[in-house]
Length: 164
Image (cartoon, rainbow, N blue to C red; front, side, top):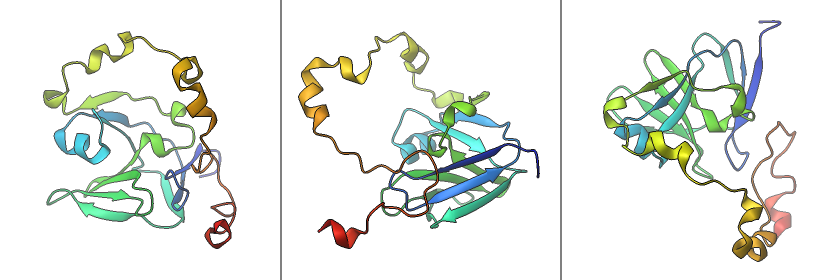
């Protein structure tokens, strides 16, 4: 698939990484109750990898059979939702991609379960994290253990036994 776009991504802790080669044109938001529960969110942003070359490059997800035909992959170490797997193909959580901004949604599914306030989210007041003056002292103490948004040869950067 030379000349086709490449994408990478993984879970929050870095135990699981993936790579996709090929055109990804089916990026969606699902409002069904199962997806809301699986993502712990108001909806689930998903990107179909049907027709593309998909490979796990580090680790493998664990699975939960959420219905008689669908299983959902997740990282057993950090809990990140990763996949929606059905007989007709697999979709990957949009937020698990290293550059989710490259995959804007083009359709919404499960509209009958869409929460009534979702369309108003863009109208809510918004501010940058550092604008929360009351939280600045707390924010300065945070040390992220999140995997960076790119592939790394090893993760975590130092062995767990050395963290003591």
